Image (cartoon, rainbow, N blue to C red; front, side, top):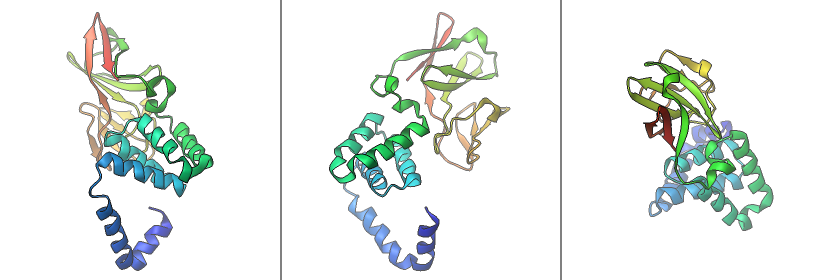
Length: 208
C-alpha cells in the first residue's frame, strides 16, 4: 500500500475496515480470475503502478493468460481511454515478462531446446538464454530442474551472480529460493516458476 493509504488505515481503520469488507463481499460470487481482471482494470484506471503490478502477478498466478489480461484492458477501453491503456502497456514492457513478448503471447506450450546435457555437471546450476526467455537449470543426477529467471514477486530478472550455493536471492526485495526445489525459503511465499523437462538425443528440453 501507499504511505497515504497506510496512514488512513492507521487513523481510520474502523471506517476503512467496513469498506474493505464491502469490496470482499461484493466479489464473493465471482471466480478468482474475474476478480483479478477487475482489480487489474481498477488499478489501471487509478494509474496506481504498484497496485497494477501486484494484481497483474496475482492474475497470472490464478490462471489468467497474458492475452486475457490484454483483452480485459482493451474491453475496458470506454472506461479507461487509450492513454491509460498505453500507460499500462508501457509498464508491461518495462517489466520485460517473457509471457507478454509477441513471440510467446499467442503460442501454445511446446518443447523448447535449452542446452546439451553434457554442458552441465551433476550438482551444477547454469543460467541459459532461450530466445524470449532466460532460465536457471539445475542438474541432480539424471534429473533436471528448469526455472524462469524472473522473481515471482515483481518479475525482477535475477542474475546468475545472485546464486550462492543452492540459494538464489532476488536482488530487489531479497526473496530467497532453493534452486533444488524452486521453493521460496525466505521473505516471500511464491516459488520460482518451473517447467516440465525431458531429454532427447542428448539435449535438455523444457515445456513452455
